[in-house]
Length: 163
Image (cartoon, rainbow, N blue to C red; front, side, top):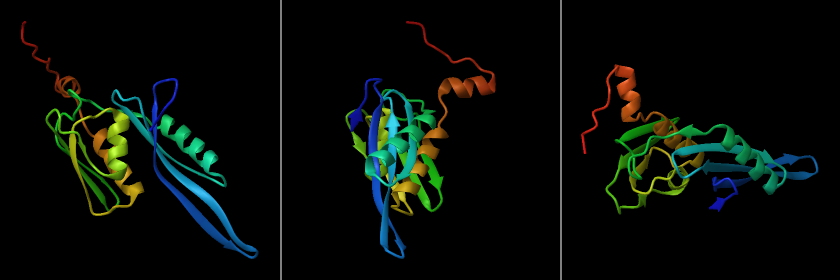
């Protein structure tokens, strides 16, 4: 986990070497899947491909910063349970009580750490391909709505008890 000067966390989910067979032998290139987040409810991901690893990581990071979304959080966890889907990948994300930690593997864990979620239960269903699991996770998070968003859509005001 890297953190740059703007407070943005960058995590490498997958780094893959791909070979293209040509007349003279094999040509290698690299593809990098990177997740970025501010730790306060914003997250994005990007895929970068290049002949060199650092260049692939740079491209992936740039694309990830361009694709950032906001996620509503309640005290370090999700507001409610959600199922994200992309291709054959399904990711179930469930809010957890304080102190549970991040119960998630691989791509899902990277996204949760980058977005700033500290307590969550998750299960990847259907595939363990990091690309599809990552996209399913982000799709699930993007579908979350905060209480204020729902109230605004319904034309209602949020009730706030007096102190």
